[in-house]
Amino acid sequence: MRLISALLSRLHRIDSIESRCERIQEALGRIEARQLRAVSLPSTQEAEFRVFSQWGEDGIIQWLVHLVPIARRVFVEFGVQDYQEANTRFLLVNDGWSGLIMDGDENYINRIRSSDLYWRYNLKAQSAFVTRENINELLLASGMSGDIGLLSIDIDGNDYWVWEAIEAVSPRIVVSEYNARFGFERPVTIPYEPNFVRSRAHYSSIYYGASLLALERLGARKGYALVGCNSAGNNAFFVRSDCLPEQLRALSAREAFAPSQFRESRDQQSQLQFLSPEQERSVLESLPLVNVEG
Image 1 (cartoon, one colour):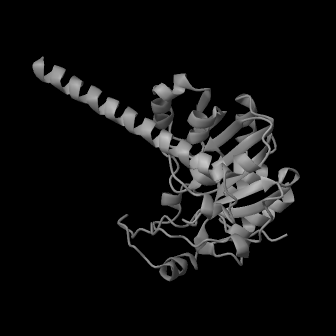
Image 2 (spheres, helix red, strand yellow; image 1 turned 90 degrees about the vertical axis):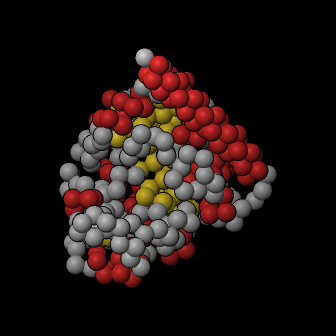
Image 3 (cartoon, one colour; image 1 turned 180 degrees about the horizontal axis):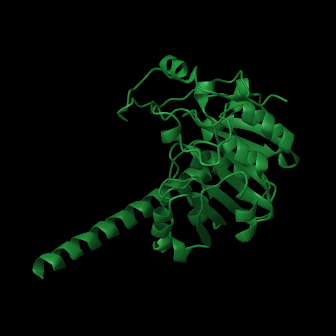
C-alpha cells in the first residue's frame, strides 16, 4: 500500500509540473502575440513562434487572425493526434475560440475527452478517418457550417482531395500541409485513395500529400490567396480573397515556397535514413502522382 501511495503521489507531482509548464508556455505565447501586434512584418516566417504547434505555426496564426477580420472565432482541425501538438490549441486557450478537432485514432480522442482541456474550453473532439466522401457530413453533424475563422488540414495523405471536397464551411484562413519534396514547379498530388496511410503507401513514409503549386491552384479555384509558408517547409497559409487585408498579398508557389528542413525518410526496416533532399526526391521519382493542373 505504501508503494502504491508513493507512486500515486509521484504521478500527482508529475501532473502538477506538466500543468505548470503549460501555463508558462501559454504566458510566453501571450507575450509573443502582443509583440506581433505592435510591428509590421514582411512575411509569415517572421511571425513564427511555438507554444503548442509543431513548428512556428502558432505565431503565424496569431499574426494572421490579428490582420484578417474574423466574424466567427471558430476553428476546425483534423489530424490532431492527442492534441498536445496542434495548430489550434493556442487559439482555444489564449483567444477564447471554440472548435472541432478530429483524428482517426479513437484512443487519441478518448484521451482528449478525459483531459482537463475538454471541460475547461468549448471544444468538440470527434474520432473519424477523414475522406473526401465523408468530410462534409462530419462537419455538418458537428454543427460546423458556413463562415468560420480557420481550417487546419494535416492528414499526411489526401490533404489536397479533402480540401477540394469541403463545401460545408467557408474558413477565412486555411492552413494546409504540403510536401516540399515535390518542389514548387509541378502541380501534383498523390492519387486519391480513401484508406491512404502514408506508412503503408511506401516504406519511406515520405510519399504523401501535394505540392505547394497544386495547393496554390486549388486555393485560387476556391477563392483563396496563398500568403506564405512556415520556415520548416511543411505548412502553407491561405486567406480567403474577400477577407485579404492590405498588409498581405497573394504569393505564387515559387515566391512562398520553403524547402523541407527536416528529414523523416525511413528504410525498409522503418529506421530513419537521414537522406538529403536530393536523395528523398529520387525515392519519389518512381511513385505515381496526379497532375492537377487546370
